[in-house]
Image (tube, rainbow, N blue to C red; front, side):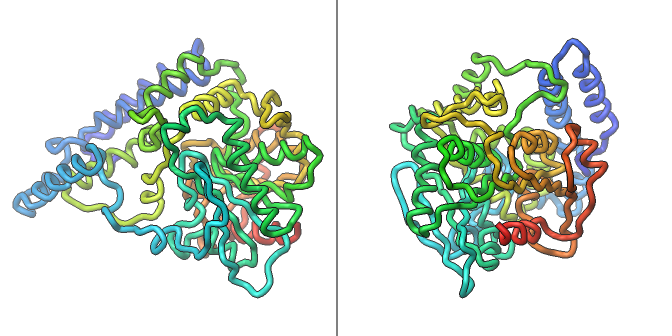
Length: 445
């Protein structure tokens, strides 16, 4: 609920009414979820606190400042209109600089082509672990989700723990890359990066790490290597990543081809590429109260400027995507091709049950993009021993988990039940960062 709302019960009542209609038994789980989303979007947009006359806090501030807050708000609005096409700012312009405030861990590019760069980070210890790490981001996000502000950077922490770390950084595609599909992308990005890491380090094995859609690439690479009887993946780490898109009610109601094609066209820009900024806006709408309306109220009605926050800065620095790649991955998710063992990449089948290496899996209990239950179902598809960790955070906040007194997670041992709720009830709480548990886990493998 918007804390400035003067009429929250009315808004919540509208949401509950919409959600009751969305639970009609004739609708599949996906259709009900869509109806609930549209009902919530409408309720959030119509919250009286989003309008000056319906926001007592904004009116009181306007009186107390003799209109100065409204003048500042108007300036913020005009600034957002010019700089951001009307989207409310979530971080101050210029508050972060790459290489200084974000992506600041020392390293160098060891491979570059027109689609990808591979970065190797400088070691921070006299001795390093034998097996290197390869970090794979989602193809719509910048690599430095792994390397946020100093003190909150997974890369910085990993090199200090004695690991040799490499990361994939997607380059901004050009219009000539519009026809790059998943098979070509797989060959030229994760598979090429894996070759680069092995050539440089001489290590026959590599720890594969993937976040969100990057986890799909990491798991697919591990399965692809297994299909060729190749030694390659030492372990697999999946962060907030769904491999299984089975609906919660089990009803098979995938997106139609027409729906996925329409979404791809909607997100495609004049250069013929799926616009990363538009994809980011789509994700923002999943939590519009926090990511759209609250910044708008704060900036335009209250006259405040946003505070620096590294996650917001990263989230707005998106990468465009070839539309063929985007459309194919949408169809793979819609038809649940990966979970059903029907995906082939670079001439080999991708069978997740053939991934017999140990896996470390992290999910966020408040993840609004990849529900933790979907991550749990995905982990059960892997053929090796899986250490599953549930953190009380959202999609990105669960990744940024440096050791601190408040850090915690839940985990379990023994056979994993089919029902995620049963696993949660049986799991045990741990008062530490999953980064610490991961470091110990990697060090023994």
